[in-house]
Length: 191
Image 1 (cartoon, rainbow, N blue to C red):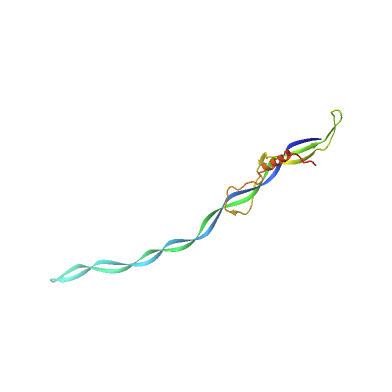
Image 2: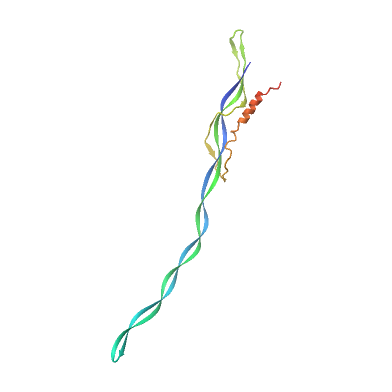
């Protein structure tokens, strides 16, 4: 019986949670106090002076002289008065939200495989028969290569944004591989 320990590469698909920031744009109604000018009709008192011809007889002669006459009249004009009023306006608003989702990553990693093979020989070194190869997985090894998949986003968003979130719960696999190697190095208990 020939027992060989092999490191066999294999691909696995890992679901990785991802989050991203998004801006949510909307409008909301707000009441704003504004000022406007309202026309008001007012009257101004204006004095006009004009000359009237007055005739008088002095020493038997007729004399003409001009006499100033002042009259007062009310002239209308438009004045503007400032007043405050409420206006309902659409105000654009922005909000920072977080959208969560996942992506499927393909990782090329390895496993420690124990291969047991039984070989039967003649007395001379000639191979007579070869039995089936049996293998069993012992432990995970470290990851070699990651190939990131396309993110799949949720339709709902969550308020706020929290930085420094873990991007993958499956990336911490080094500890489990070291623990499996430590179990292999320990002496096996008698059966």
